[in-house]
Image 1 (cartoon, helix red, strand yellow):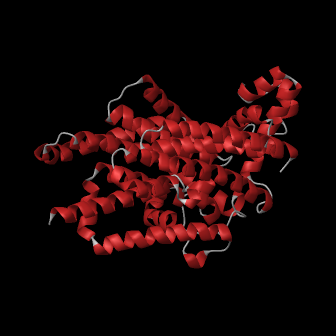
Image 2 (tube, helix red, strand yellow):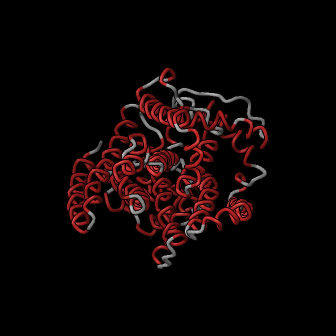
Image 3 (tube, one colour):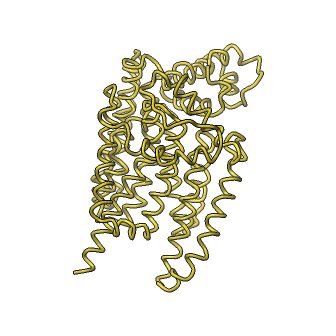
Length: 438
């Protein structure tokens, strides 16, 4: 906390408050108005709380490095010489003598994905005089935009479930905490919500407005730039979602029965080649090297970069082969969705994750035991299918490549709203099926 934070942050908060009041007044639906302000201000609270925890609990960490050892340096370059600051912000990292005195102070300068976040923070720093807390508020605003777009996408389809959809997408505590501050996770989670909204608009509702197409491309580009593995997990689910929505919109039961088995292989093949094409941008995520990447990442986080981030775990030996990685899939999905168990808690932040995991486990087990057949039938719903395909694929991906509960708590937040939403929609489907019998 610095003097600039005490001066600038209140001004930014006042501006956000006045702007949010105006935006809220423009929302016609009274239910949406009800959730707008709480969701927005919880995001801001989460961003500020994250900075507080990193400063006083972790004594540093990624958010500190992105700002104090990253965007702050770029801001200082702008203050000294506008042209130097501009080049440091926009030029591709390399041998630029005129910016060397600044770039050598930035640990992430040659890390393309991390420096992307530094650049975003630097842009906000130009508006906040490099106040960390004020810049964190701007990250929270971007995070809120994606969450709100995601919420609207499903609220419009299921307005009677507004409370449960809001809880799933807007109010999961760990998502608010880890997905609001100056971190990669805030940017990618928001972009994922915007991408879901745009896909629904462009490919499902067929609303081909330029703004929707730009939003689709922009959000996908952000995810690829920062965490490509998210888009690799999301693409198969999106393929199935769009395909199933189109098939079910025919309204003909006969058409669904006849064409579904024929078209599903084409969707799988299309998803495969889509993933292969995107992964060409980063060799380590190519389909023939992804297992080795998972092995290297898991052991690096477990024994080096994440050794102090929380308690470690192991699923068994990763041998760097695809079959060896797939053999650990059940354990990987379990650790992402349902662990740490309550008895594995080692610190207060792990307790938050453990309580959420226990809740997910309890609901899932109850549904499996109480409504086993209805549980399977619910998978015929395109939205449920979409939520669970992404959740399970992503749970496998992060679970098998992390090996540290502290790091996993952050990495898994993109799947939590989708899995929670899938459970909500499944319960709704089960209730609708029961009502049809009477």
